[in-house]
Length: 106
Image 1: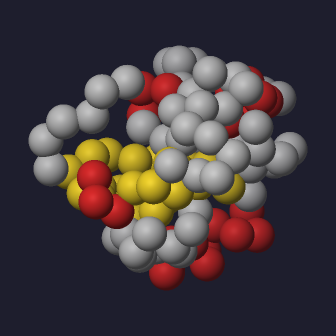
Image 2: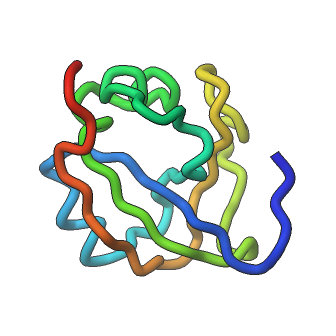
Image 3: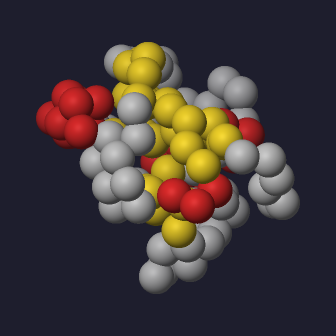
């Protein structure tokens, strides 16, 4: 995936217990992806598989915008085993809206 321009929409999937913490802080170091990496209609379980995240973390999504200079390739690589591009954020990112229970069905 080639990124161009100045601002990118990013998404972060998380569990209920971490949702408010990230929403309040924009949490530097969080792993993020772009919305296009998740096929429309994906279940929470499919999202967890694509992004290599723990069970329950595919149900809630936060989104925000950031510049390319705030996105870093994680030490574990730029692509998950599920084929999704991944980044880490360097500085806090304002997030919203919070989508709770976004995906139906496990």
